[in-house]
Length: 255
Image (cartoon, rainbow, N blue to C red):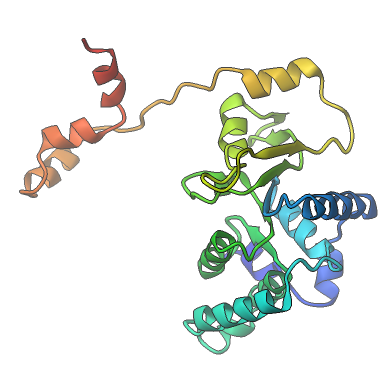
């Protein structure tokens, strides 16, 4: 288990120090979520570009309760069935206990520091409409088909490993595209929180309307891969090449 997974959700004293949401930020989120609830624009995914920030936001909203008594009962029974797969001592892990408390109130957290079984539980409850507010990093938008009615960006800037920069058009589109559930919502709502500097219109236009970065295939055919494919009767080397993303542009451009 990662160090972050061990510390997330530590009870009592650790919560107050490890996850301290600033009062002004708490007020912003309580006001925003109350407005979205009144306008029937839940569920919402709040994209945050820091695991620690996700934890702070969810853990700081202690007064927020978005589920009915029947929903709490459904969540409780679902958690019991899922957590029965864990050993008795593992069910008492701080992260498990804290996430269970959040889920009962309709809140969830999703990032790489969360235990895999808890991430799966969060995803399933979100798909059922029982998680009303999900604080997640951008990995939630990659490969997981979990649309929401509303998407909120906690910031339009992220750290890319070396410096802080604005979101790229492709990154914005990938996350904003989660707003609006097919067959359920005629439109989706995307909200950018401006808690400090208001972004320049040119920067917003570049992020929202700019051309996405071109994808580059990382597929590399090696001798070892060829030998392994020759041992499998069900798949030929030619078929493997045709299924790779690197072949897609070639077929698209060919007459």
